[in-house]
Image 1 (cartoon, rainbow over the protein chains, first blue to last red):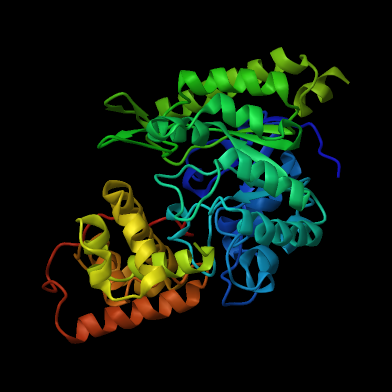
Image 2 (cartoon, rainbow over the protein chains, first blue to last red):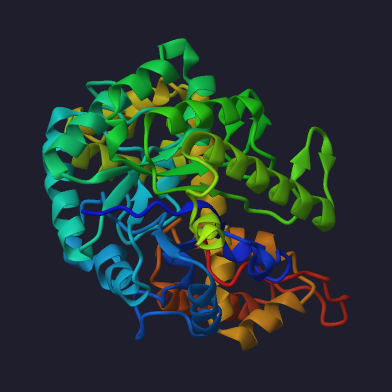
Length: 306
Length: 146
């Protein structure tokens, strides 16, 4: 399957609608959260009426990529009953996305339990989920990537490190990886005592299967580090980006934010400064991309060069 | 340890205050009376009480967010709630509890129907604040949960 080289983009999170000037930006890609634009699963239609026009407008301006938190890719329900098959597959086709990604969590017709339920890193689940992922990718008709999760504890019954599980899963499924560098950073902080190592993770996963990279921020609360997407990208995560871009060839680097009031230390920024922080992160991301792949290697700079 | 069994047991924990207490405050897993394999799952979660508590907190906050998001599909009821003077988050949290901490996921119509039924029952029971209470200057949650 072909993965286009897009460049640096932003997640189109409805939390940002109404205050962030998406359409004024020179983005190489816009990552649409399918969960946020799809019609309810227990009603008619494909897309929320309130989202139809804005998504159509976005698609005229930027290459759209597909992303999800709650597709049910890795649940236990029949695959045909999931949001992934009933809503995300037709959305992916309607928007002609080059790839789709979802998280390595369990979920069924449920949403709130997703974040507490990382996959069981076991041999049996490599087989079961590998077959499920292969079937789902076949329905999409474009690459399906699995995002490494940030989690507070591993699933009972896990038998191997996360990175080994992911490598085995991809071997079985023929699917791809969506590498969230802030999740990796968060796990290293929260699980350093149990031997979690970023270097080992990156040396073990098949980097040639990484088709998208996520960048985000987060913070400590009560002794745990949280992937809250409410700060600028931490310095250590920028270092990881340089490392990964030098060893992999992803289709895009996507930045994620979830609040109009980002935190900066103990300060809560107003909307104007939040926008400044986001734009500064995007600019730094473009610089990192261009340093790795050259100045005319992004969707927008290719057009300018032409 | 079978992954499906772990998943089913975890979802029982998420919906049951008694099991929550057990896995977050050092209770004996056997006391739950769930049987051998499920007991082992409970014991595993109980070994990491802080992380398990964080996960349960995320789940229950997610239910509140989703309930308020689902209400956007029934805007008249949504408006009534947001101008009622009630603490909207607290109402949604109480709804989640009385709804058995059930997670309807992307079945927003079903969730909205249950939330409206809860609000109607609450109204009938006279639990809303006085009619002349000042309206809270609250903003609706995001259109779609998540």
